[in-house]
Amino acid sequence: MPLATATKIRALRRDFKTGAAIADLLGVNRSQVTRWLRGAGIDPLNAERIDLLELVWANLLRLYEPGAARSWLFGLNPHLGDRRPIDLVRAGRAEELLRAIRAERAESFA
Image (cartoon, rainbow, N blue to C red; front, side, top):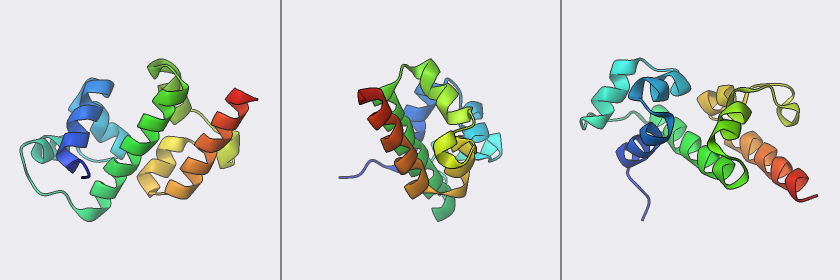
């Protein structure tokens, strides 16, 4: 059974330390994250962004320590045409992100 979006937000907040950090990652107002954590409804677009951020973050933590995973998320990535992965999370570009992570994984095992 899939985890509820609010559960994912709480888990991400533990990893990123604050709800404000999650809001910044998603490009939403900080009060929005607080409302979501209090049980307010989450619109489909932001629910998808949260799902994607959680998926990307979980995959990155399989490859890197948290600090390196954060650097990957915010750094320019050659597998993404020198775009920042976090910007693709905000845009909902799951396929491109997962391809870039697979490429990172392949390079780490080469």
